[in-house]
Length: 305
Length: 308
Ligand SMILES: Nc1nc2c(ncn2[C@@H]2O[C@H](COP(=O)(O)OP(=O)(O)OP(=O)(O)O)[C@@H](O)[C@H]2O)c(=O)[nH]1
Ligand SMILES: Nc1nc2c(ncn2[C@@H]2O[C@H](COP(=O)(O)OP(=O)(O)OP(=O)(O)O)[C@@H](O)[C@H]2O)c(=O)[nH]1
Ligand SMILES: [Mg+2]
Ligand SMILES: [Mg+2]
Image (cartoon, rainbow over all chains, first blue to last red; front, side):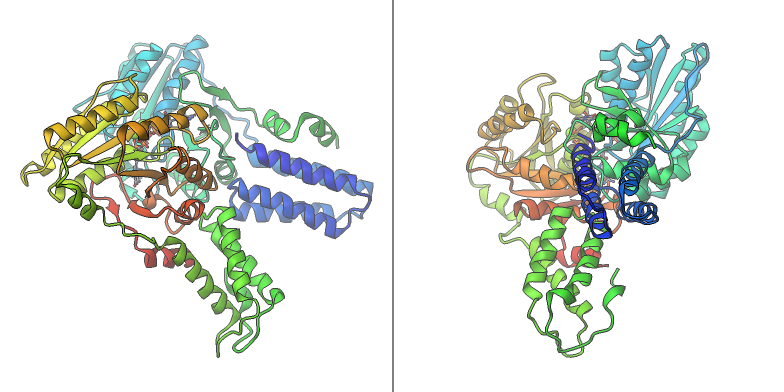
């Protein structure tokens, strides 16, 4: 479960501190140490952990030891955590009925794009949108078959080609076709790629230009470690994605790497992938997520400040 | 990362206090390289213990002493204790009628099927007759993916007399049964090697993990290789441990393939984490999406990257 252990440990560290009578600098340091260890074990970016530590310490040190300080510790830990998973964007894309909304998927190899594409198409389908899928992965062996089989199971129309090798052309053809047929959600799946391969990034930009997506989604595997930041920054620069889907949250990874990507790109997580099956998709709500993370009771106390 | 401890040079008996800052810097350095915290702490603690009470060499700073000790420790972790000459092992088995069986396991999307195809390419170049067994009967497109690879590899190696075929039974069937049948088929047809692809599974999924025991019993692989991706963080430790213990008493993993090394730059800490967690050696590195992108591990190179 994403950040499950982290939540327990942070709650433990904070409440341990809050229960003790004096909150001197040593006690504060100990608590920060515990929190940072938990964050690092959860794969949160090393630099990010350091700045988080500084920022909490800065806020708290300014106040004298005493009951005041305890509340400050609670609220600053809470705020830093919320900031970590919630970049506070108001202009989140919402598809509109009666027009074609194009959604393009991008991400590293094997992160879960193709699987999530179909999950999302079904999600919108179930909410009354006429949805379809376009396979613009002409590189990976069996990519079109994978999408086709998933789409067939989900009863979603799809487009792709076994012979065309240019993903820009396939994506354009598919999107044009479905646009004409008045589909409302058109999801474009692309090949996995990484920042070290310029050619692949250029291709992504070309597909982007060809299909002009209303929303670009980066799919991130929740087990990713320290490479998350550099990779997601590079994707942000080239594809300017506006949302993140965190996949494989049914695994035991804590997801801190992926959450560092949120911080690095100031882009919100919108969905969680929770399994290999079609229905394993959950909406992500940062406030509720942090609330659950720290245990509701504590959060109530933390929020009033 | 090493800027801390430049000052003191030569002939000093090291105390725990001297080492505190340099070790903290070292831990931080390893974490940045994507070494799992558990592994990084263990490496640092062991090194610290070995250094306390030691005298630094003439003109040797604490910095260099610590660096050298960490370097040695990483090298030791990565250096295999047994021979990893796969080709020779296969060659040795050629006189027997049963083919050499390799199965590939790992969590979802790490690169099992792709790296299986790369190994196949490598074996074909070495003139072995290879049967690929499509035992991922779950994930959409898994069979077709291997069909494409088998076709490509056939084309690539046909001129040099390479023989590769795909054994497939479609979707939904029991992987262990198909694996056993594939090995029998290969034995009958005189194949040298069977490469078995399996479905990706979460290492914390009891049900899927426990089916691996039956799989090993039925397929009786000579080598069970786990693919772990270089991208993965702390979870690498648990992934390696859980897969290593999934095959029942008396059977463990034989090696790792660390894939997607081309995607992480110098952050190749997963190598350390997975070997640290299990003591199982790294057999191959995956360094790209093409058939040639498979390397054996050069430990000196790896340690150099980790220390850079
Ligand atoms: N357990 C679990 N597995 C998932 C989830 N999402 C995807 N997967 C699995 O992850 C593997 C890779 O998924 P794909 O959808 O093929 O990934 P991709 O990003 O399209 O891969 P490429 O196109 O090769 O870059 C498959 O085995 C999926 O079944 C999830 O939320 N949980
Ligand atoms: N950059 C890079 N990509 C790789 C490497 N190995 C595999 N891939 C890519 O990773 C993605 C997933 O590879 P697969 O071989 O399908 O992974 P898998 O483990 O079989 O996936 P499932 O069967 O769905 O669990 C594909 O896009 C591959 O091209 C590698 O060494 N480097
Ligand atoms: Mg895909
Ligand atoms: Mg596979």
